[in-house]
Length: 244
Image (cartoon, rainbow, N blue to C red; front, side, top):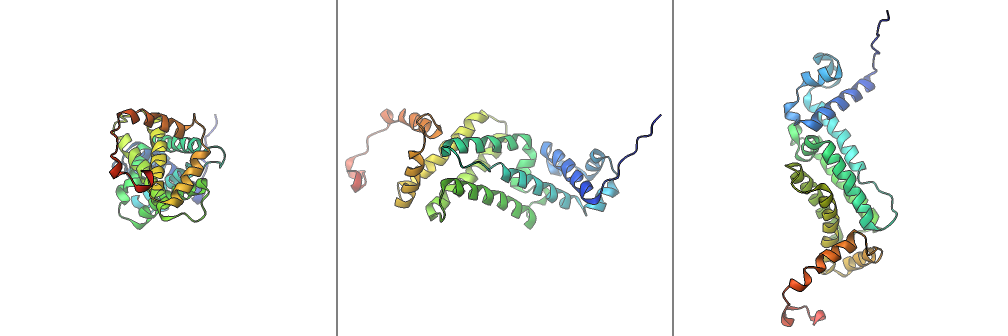
């Protein structure tokens, strides 16, 4: 007979294990419903030992949030190759992969969960949003974003976040359709802003000129063209002077 010897973990290894166990539990249930006893049981250690590594549930929760935030920020990383529309589709696919894999955990990350209102949780959420914003700006190739472009990108990041949270409540719209719709939303937000600002117009015209007809942005134009015959004509007196 052989005796199975449990390997003793180092401090950082044990902390990493507990964070992983907690994140897994938080990903399937609301953090409010997960107890320290459950985390200890899942990790195969005693409750007091959990407190040896983390002062309390909030500190463990915030450590799990940090790992989730780092992973979610990484979903926005994409090679700067090919048309922007195709890149955004891949980003949205990875983003919704995370949302689907970590449903309650994603909701807790964005809404605050039991750590709601803490500066650490707020900073983590802001960090994810900032990382997403910086990635999109980098894809647009703009060094000093004009104010309207910043408004568009930050509004779009917030839209993706709120859409994902709403989608988790019943998943009433096919996920692939939402991913494509969010990419179309980005183009639409940019186009509307471009109608008001010459600098934004330059950015969006450059983006659209690099898009293939069969890409996501080209598909948006096709979908919108269906509405054109039904759209009421605008009286000339209401058109901008430049379009009369």
